[in-house]
Amino acid sequence: MDKYEFTLNILEGITSKVNNEDCILALFTGSNWAINEKIEDLRKVKAQNVPMDIGFSFMGGKILDVEKIKRELDPKKIYIEKDIYELNNIFHGYSQVVVPNITMNTLSKVSLGVIDTFVPNVIWGFLYKNKKVFLDFGCVRKFNGEECKNSVINNQVEKHIENLLKMGAVEIETKKYVDKILPISNGIESLEKAEKTVITEKDLMNLSHTNRELHIRRNTIFTPLAKDRARELGIKIIKEN
Image: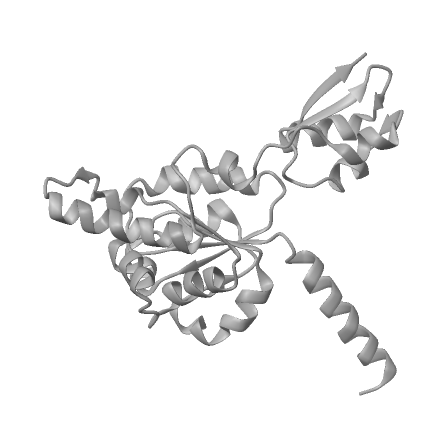
């Protein structure tokens, strides 16, 4: 390996780490109940300038409209069942996992430590490493969209949910993904402390995607591109005296 190739490999490794620092992996299992609403929630999360890749369980790939999900979320990478052999790369490549349609099969497997397929392995691994795991339990609380009339089954479902929450998973609900996955901040300290008089598009791009409010001095000037970027990211600009 010559010096040029060696340097390229180093730069590629650095770029990969930077690009994946806040990247989300959305995993889809074998339920299509309310899937359009859940995809829309994920799309809103990604619209906050958050990189997002996707993965499918074996049944998820069979039941769901994979092409539509790809069009809506436009991921750079897509994982399927055979990528169970890429777990170490997945654990290091993403900061958090989101499962918008977890099924009873996947829920019970992770709860009981049965990690024999791709999606349970990823969820278990992220919890094991104390990384962020967001789970929407709507599909197991309403099987095929219907409330369960069997109290024993209800108790079993809730026990598994409780177990995963104790493991460190965070529950998310439809129409509330953005607020839960990207917590609202009380302002943008980096710009406030600098007391900048001119805010550029680059300033906004360098901010954490968790910020939703920008408190600035009344005489602060925004460039036209900065205003467009603020609207795109959904950042509320608050001018203070």
